[in-house]
Image 1 (spheres, helix red, strand yellow):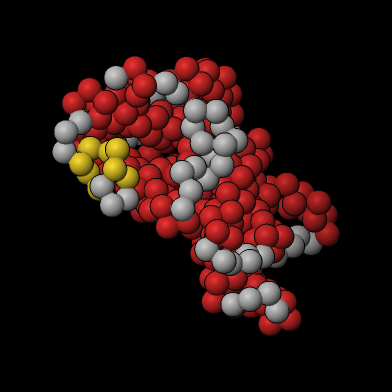
Image 2 (tube, rainbow, N blue to C red):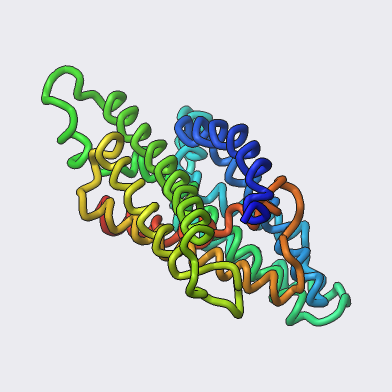
Length: 320
């Protein structure tokens, strides 16, 4: 049994240092948050390409990193627009792309450039090279960029009719106060996602160590158990309910339950998918960058998979 806890010390050390910093940046939002998520995305994509090279591919690293960065900035559309527009206010204005238009334009340009480069590159199979390049940016880039999208839903896009329910009809109900309140909710929402994923992982880890008897998916991850998965699921649910009660009044109780359930199910699914990728590539960890955790891709595999699902639910259901 002691061997099972051998890597606990480095895991705790990294958590004590990294978690407060990530949560603080998540609460602040803005460009600093985008840069943090972008940094996670870049590191994860580079590790993904290491797995791709183990399968004989030669992915296009530079175009992929540029495409990933552009996709993240597409979700930061509102604040980019607020920065650019004042420069043209005295010149008759300027026409800018809508967020969806910008996102689709970036995707179209990225796909076109990758294929054109592969036409002249002559470095093996186009199916492997372009396939891994595009898949890496779509999976790591688009999925993780959705977290930036979640954070920015709580700016000008937040429904006014929902926000004013939480501010008395007094002189305090100003656009500035409403924006500050909703943007703070966005920070707490992202924090709740991070903490729910971490609690899911922690509950699954200790639940599996102490009670795990029935293998969850032995072909992909032989150490995971159904008992651990159940502990992880309820860990995510309880955490999200607690955040709803104390920090997220805009959520209804059943919506908090659904978000916690999504994290408990799809977060663990993302971990299994990344384990399948590593097993196919014949490696244990995507890298050794984070002591006790492996690589960045290892640490954020659950977040990568669950972020777009949460973005769609929050945008189209909770805030509709």
